[in-house]
Image 1 (cartoon, rainbow, N blue to C red):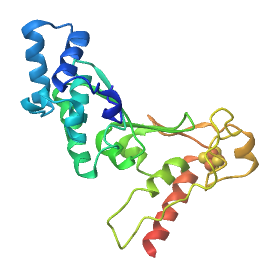
Image 2 (cartoon, rainbow, N blue to C red):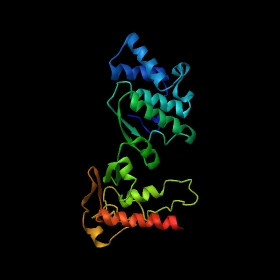
Image 3 (cartoon, rainbow, N blue to C red):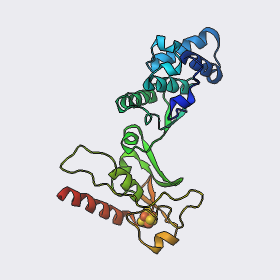
Image 4 (cartoon, rainbow, N blue to C red):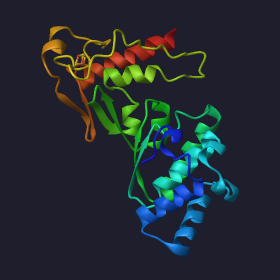
Length: 244
Ligand code: SF4
């Protein structure tokens, strides 16, 4: 697993090399020279320089610490790595290098990621399939490009409207999510998203759990609005914005 904040997950009393060596011993079952070689190999793969292996986490930059955390996650040659917002605690200037490193390792190490993020632009860059969740419930599931093409779930639509754009002729029109975030221990009745949904249909959304709709094989969302109608509503909104 790669966590959001390396400061909270790297032992400050150990050197980076010690942290990796322990992980290689525990997760990879290696010892002696083989263990030392695997630590060097991991450091090379994530581009942590040799002198930094002697440093403690407090002596490393945020990007270097996250590289050590990533190397540790690969210590046992995993088939699946869970990445929980791995770049969001870093400076914007180093976020791209960490995401590029993860993309590179995905190919060279042959791993799958479960990549958790609130940043849809980042998710689109790295993912083959995307699952959109709200209040611990799956709202939409589909291929990365399908999710970004109407129709999408109204919550996905709102998230997309929050992606910044450099197209000054057609600035994104943010869909505000009104009201407070409901409690997870007492989620709203019917559709969980109904207290904040901009496409709210009234009693139906309050009282009835929405069906799981199929847009195409492998692309589904949870809503009372049918795919054809939702597509029209969303395309009309995009046309409207383009005309302004
Ligand atoms: S079921 Fe109703 S409240 Fe839920 S996403 Fe669809 S329109 Fe919005």
